Image 1 (cartoon, rainbow, N blue to C red):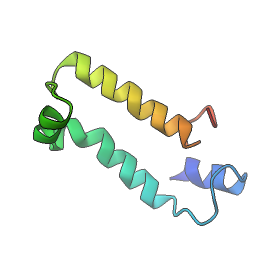
Image 2: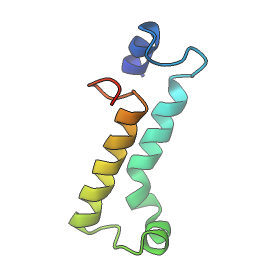
Image 3: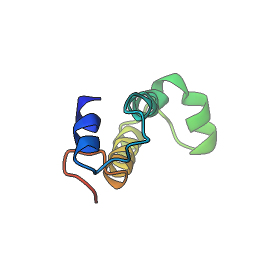
Image 4: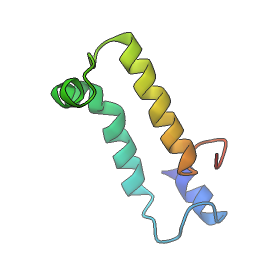
Length: 76
C-alpha cells in the first residue's frame, strides 16, 4: 500500500482511490489459480496448475498492474 500511497501523493494515482482496495484486489487476483481453479479451468480452458498457465497468468497480471499505473516502472 505504501507504494500506491507514494504514487498517489505524486499525482500518478487518483486521490479518490483507497490504496487498500487495489492492494486487496491484486492480492486476490494473484491467488486466483489456487483459490479458483474451477473458474480458471472452465473460463480459460486451461490447467490452472500448469507452469505454462501460471507464467501466462503472472505476465497478464503484471501487464494489468503496469497499465493501471501501479507498477514500479510507472505507467505503461
